[in-house]
Image (cartoon, rainbow, N blue to C red; front, side, top):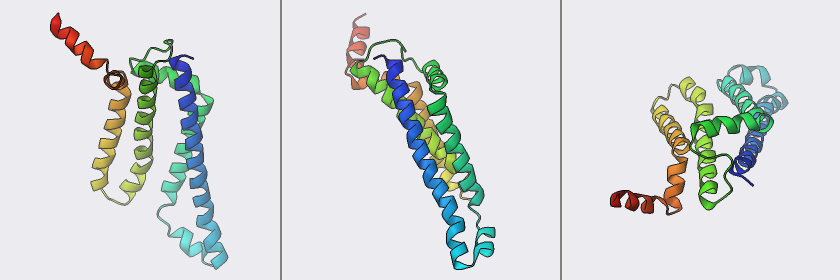
Length: 167
């Protein structure tokens, strides 16, 4: 198994996770209409529900990413590998597994806040935008520096620094 294979498995697992998240959002959307209809207040309740556009956006966003992660896995892997220093054909080592996991965590750190941006802007709660920006920045750093972080965790970075000192 190569690093590219492991990254493919992790991306597909993320796609399944996003699919489950989207099912939860679809159920939330259905309940938005089902419960008020049973109570006889459908038109008043749903017409005034301000979160409906956010819910629809989240459903489409998660389903699009689900399609990309499950249906277009190869393209996603090539995009991720082009943005990192991970070698796609290397055999698995502890460092390579760390790299793939950090790329996956970085993706999750970017995906979830992006889906929340619309709701925060709609609520005019600009204090939370700072936390979204930090989360997206941390996710991007995890993706771009996954090799360095993995090397540090694999105890190779300290030895590399010592060898640079001796030169």
